[in-house]
Amino acid sequence: MRMVFIGPPGAGKGTQAERLVKKYKMAHLSTGDMLRAARDAKTEVGLKAEQYMSTGALVPDDIIVAIIAERLQSADCREGYLLDGFPRTIAQAESLGKMLMAKGTPLDVVLELQVPEEELFRRLAGRGRADDNPEVIRQRLVAYRKQTEPLLDYYRKQGLLKSINGVGTVDEIFERAGLALEGS
Ligand code: AMP
Image (cartoon, rainbow, N blue to C red; front, side, top):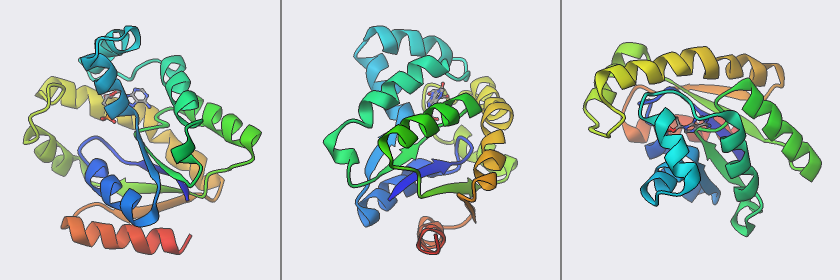
């Protein structure tokens, strides 16, 4: 299965993604994890990305698209993959669409995890990552609303979008995800 997993920061995508990739034997492609690894290794891309990440802004599309284009060539992606945190803009989605069209491997499904804003703020404030201070959190939520939410309509129009309620226990949400995916 080739899927995109969309949800605001703090929605619990990472936790659910880890379980979904095991169940459906997909490669887990998290652009946030890739960028944090690049930052920690102090690569050129990592140092550039850090300037954006530290303020809660999105990293420029060209950087992210190049990273994903390379990653999608790996052997482990042949069986399917879960894109976690990518695409985050319409431009990224269009680039991905072109890449996949050229390979003849379109997406199967886009899963949205829905969590109300008050709940997100509460969860993010308890997480303790370097980009989790209140102002950065606020910026990340603004970036999500402005730049990423338009993707929901974009994928809805393509008939790919499934949305699930992201409030509940990890097991409850995982079950909802399974039901949504298996009905796709
Ligand atoms: P995440 O762990 O997915 O919340 O990503 C952490 C940070 O990495 C984000 O706040 C962005 O600065 C950056 N980032 C991750 N994925 C993307 C993407 N697809 N486009 C732009 N920036 C991204």
